Length: 343
Ligand SMILES: NC(=O)c1ccc[n+]([C@@H]2O[C@H](COP(=O)([O-])OP(=O)(O)OC[C@H]3O[C@@H](n4cnc5c(N)ncnc54)[C@H](O)[C@@H]3O)[C@@H](O)[C@H]2O)c1
Figure (cartoon, rainbow, N blue to C red):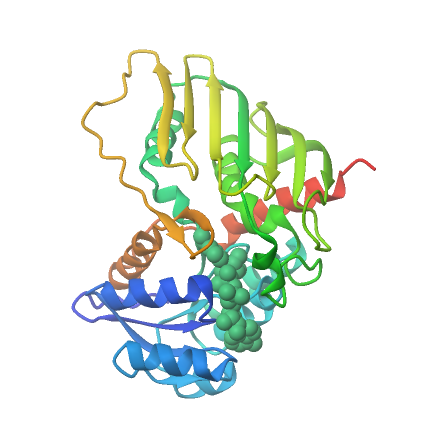
């Protein structure tokens, strides 16, 4: 059940204080409508340092300890992928709403169990999909949903990024099949979410994947051809092998009455817009910034918008945040792509 006390700050706790967990904490700290009531990480020095940095937030090295004393409304699960299912279900069973980082799980069965736990406990399970807030993505969504593009014939998606070997080596879980799943889960899932949002589920797919330039268990590159529920044909190219730095994160939508290419390195620009009777407004501020992690960049940093929107939903009971039932659809697509990799 959602609380509807608009004057009260919404309380969040964060579990997993690594690369993006730090961003969750920074965003929560900066939002006047919310309050951080606990942080947790198995690395003691990490949580201690963050606690000192942020006004001595109570910190824990054990998730159960946090849940036992914490009065959070929402727990953000920002840990490695293989922990998302168990930690989300634990939090839901203990009466918290959950905001889980992408990918919500490593298979559809687990995602379904998470959704079942949310339903059984009358709690919300949301998934971080911050790219839905990118300015070019919102514009394209409006064009598709308003029917401006007519029937969608094709979608072409390219995730042409760089991750240096140290990104994998410095981590106990990245690049591991059981713990990370692969680049489709980590990098491409942001883009797959949008393809599914606009074209419906993947009806059929064939793919090729390979580990081209990293010493890891999972694939670092692949290509997939798909047919979507709405009849659109689609291609997805994903890699973390681009030389030196991210090159492109793009989606081109080819419709009956228009063509749009969202591009830039992380879906942050409109590269092409030719839509019948709907010129691209000239006064738009394309201001999405990337998440920056020192030696590499991620996708957009719109976590502040995700938190703001969830806090609003908790305060008013009204919201259109991405729930686990929607998050499951990307997991389903990823599962289908991996299951249809040609040998
Ligand atoms: N939305 C985005 O743009 C975005 C960007 C980066 C990462 N992510 C996602 O966020 C999640 C975390 O990724 P990351 O890059 O921050 O990883 P990371 O390895 O940098 O951080 C994970 C943290 O979890 C901690 N941890 C491990 N086991 C734990 C446990 N049992 N209890 C508490 N803490 C534990 C680790 O010590 C580490 O500090 C992943 O799901 C990843 O895909 C999302």
